[in-house]
Image (cartoon, rainbow, N blue to C red; front, side, top):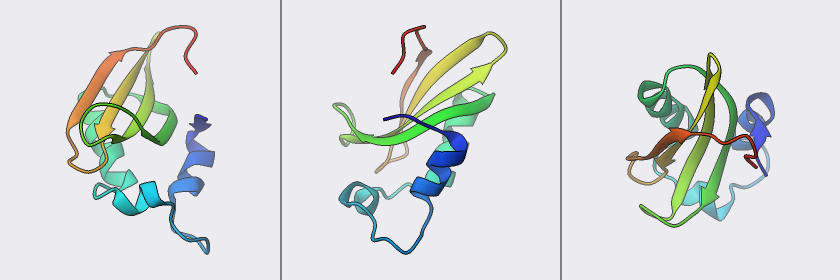
Length: 94
């Protein structure tokens, strides 16, 4: 379900297909969410997705951000822009 940054950017970008219900409810758009996530943990985004998950509004952007030998999962609420998670990503991440 996670996609590389290049592929995910296309999935989130405006195109000819209608937005999914999740994208329609997201008040914070992907570029804004990326900016918030990179302020929380600077590095290179290696994976990203928009998902329904418990916590916050129930709709969040999830980013895996690599910096040196560490990768963090950073979660941003897609409705409020609130930082929901900033934790070390385990070796067996999905």
